[in-house]
Length: 363
Image (cartoon, rainbow, N blue to C red):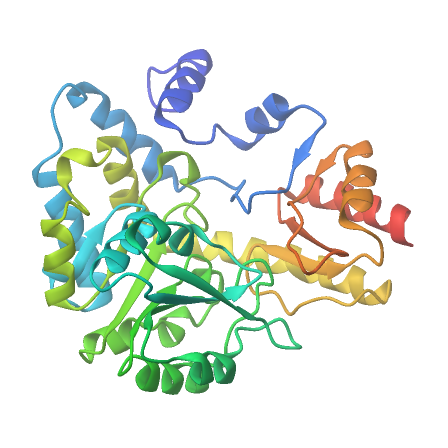
């Protein structure tokens, strides 16, 4: 707790700020039910975040201005690019719409199916058409299939790496070779929401290709490993010319950003040791999940995110209902993977309960 702040005051402030209370309070507030459905990070944000938010409460009446530019500079230094290449915000839907509006009606946006669709869902009002590319047999982004599908109508490719819902990550060398080739023919958006759960994310990130001047946009979010899902803050790194164009159209506009979110994001970036600790906890819990699934002989993906995906051998609705009866909420279905289930990694006690439920239902 901050000095002079009672437990009740802390919980009220945490609710206002949209950050997780201390772990014990979080578990008490959640009751017996475990929400393992939305890939949230229940370990919460860095302790630096809590103090940064408290420091901002006194200036809430003021509009955001220089704080946004300061965060752009901080992120740019971390990514090794110019600040004018950073666009702040959870911008995937706005990015999809603006890219669709850039060209003739009917431009195609390729994405992996099943997958996270925030960007491609937004292209229709701009005249864009979403085209799903099935995952390969390992539930990975099918890079050869993407390459074969690129044509004169292709406006952009959207790839989530590690993928959601499978959690699979593409081989770094193959992925970057693919991006180099594909970006000569269309804009490529790489969503790295989960990449920092990989210890070698700095080598895997596609930001290196943005630095090389390719037509690649990399999106990151503070909602996952940084534990800021309640504050809706992320950023994109893109070519300077395209970033300037998107900013002129309102993306990343400071007055549209949340002062508390900006402060929280900045504080998060100042605490890499906490990030390392969260990553280690998630990797350890994920290994326990994979060990169980292997022991039960259930087909699974090689997830590298903060969730697991596996074949239950029964309709998703039936399995989800059985888990709900055990007090565990899991993710929605991901057609055409009709018998597969995605379960987020929660706190250790939640994970233990969820694994016990899976063993009871499938064992």
